[in-house]
Amino acid sequence: MKNSYIIANWKMNPNTLREAGNLVAGIAKNIRIIKNATVVIAPPSIYLYPLQNKVGKKIKLAAQDCHFESDGAHTGELSPRMLKNAGVAYVILGHSEQRTAGETSAEVNEKIKAVLKVGLIPIVCIGETKRDTEHQYLSFLETQVKETFSGIPLASFSKIFIAYEPLWAIGVEANREATPEESIEMVIFIKRVLADMYTTKVAESIRFLYGGSVHPENAHLFLIHGGVHGLLVGRDSLNLKKFTKIIEITNGLN
Ligand code: PGA
Image (tube, rainbow, N blue to C red; front, side, top):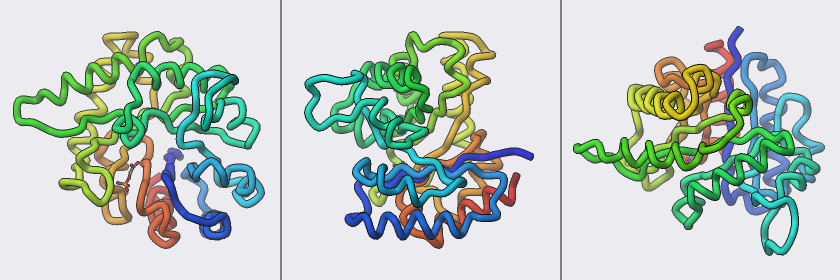
């Protein structure tokens, strides 16, 4: 039996702990019989401690970001160790909304190393801002992959998730949805860049996710044809019915 990963990125939602608790409790209840899907929820970090008691055995918690230093004068930041102590297992890094706000690939690289050091699993987002007919986006992506993954210990790659998230397909402002063919093409491309940097074995040991306007109607297409081991879900992870459906579809495929 295969296992797939469904990661919920709640971003800056919901506004109350009560809503967050109800959503987690609802998901936990709905997925009691799910066997072939690992469900990970990344709520705003202020909810991590209180949600520990609500997630049960089936749901793992993720943070949406962290700092690369282990402590010190970094106002407003959280260290990987703090997140680990709060019951977190995964950390989303380099999300496009962070990169757009100024985060560099060099910073994401430091964060990956820091997260791995304390035994957390990085979910690293990679993606081009736009598509152009001259295929400039390929060199953009190549540079992003090279800078983001430089100097990572070879043995760590089997712990890393790479989420291919084309910016033009994310959120309510998306130009259009990406296709599963575009997903698998880019997964192969990213693997080739990493195989050149390291080895084919290293590139093959990485688990890939697709993210960007995933919903119950397209989830199975990305899982079957997108070349990925799971999905990173934004908007629809805040809707109990739709998120449950995505998990059920995933479970049914495995
Ligand atoms: P979306 O967000 O599913 O709302 O497009 C995905 C993401 O930003 O991770």
